[in-house]
Image (cartoon, rainbow, N blue to C red; front, side):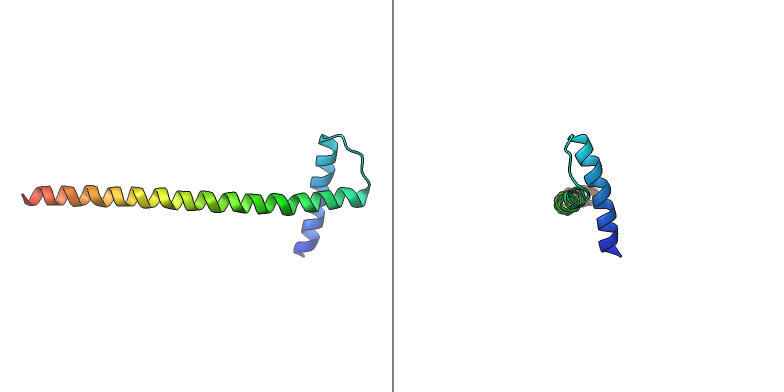
Length: 80
């Protein structure tokens, strides 16, 4: 089933891309361009999502550490 979806989505993407770029191709070439574009675009998107999630995790870790340091300083100031 995922291969069938990839072919359908690839055909639609290839059709749109060839029309936007004003390129005349046959049906099989249009589908091949769309499927290859879907695979390439999916890989790039997953890589960017991985980078974004890693960066978001890093920012979250910094924010969490800042909150803990703030709480630690607040509690230790109350003991003095």
